[in-house]
Length: 239
Picture 1 (cartoon, rainbow, N blue to C red):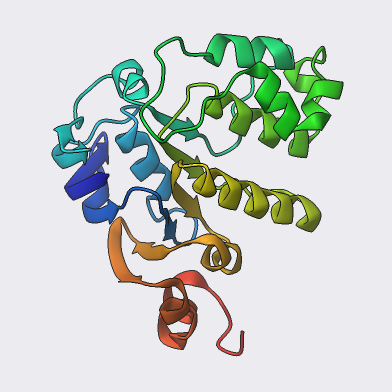
Picture 2 (cartoon, rainbow, N blue to C red):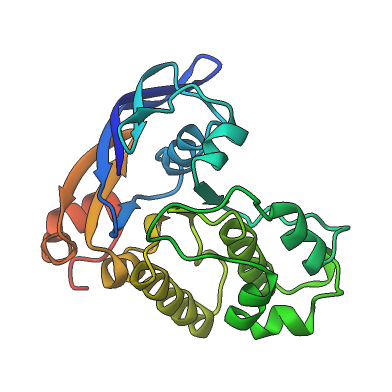
């Protein structure tokens, strides 16, 4: 579904992505792991057109999307759940979902999302539907960020640090949601610092360090590799 080929992205003269290559297969959860500051968020931004790559290629279902503007990438049914949620403080929950709604249909096999279905998925958002973004808790904001992304009926959902700042109970809920979305036909690129969480839900994992992929494997192969976990993820060797 998604092929990233030798991607190089800069912020001014700062060379952040340094030849990233990876693939995400249809119907799978592909995780990209790494410590803070290693280029994970820049990768997400490059994939959805917010920080275009200077060189390299991004292919989605065989079509080149490397230099498309974000709105055209969204129309190809790629949605981003951004790090930090990026909720508009002055808009209500319902307004957030309304402005994210798409009328462009969906690809075969993808689930159809509307406001009613988002509220069924997140009953707490239904209760808070008239509250503004700055009146929501961190967990509620994360639910809204996910719901907003789903309103575009994505076939590929890019999730940047969806468990950041969440209580353990909410992290478990996010894991259940990710598995549910996969069952319903949505492919997911999961970008996470929380390696223990990611290996529980992912089908395949990549490890990023200093703007490059330094390890790729199935989740358990990574978890059993003490050197990679300790060196690149900061996981104690005894874990």
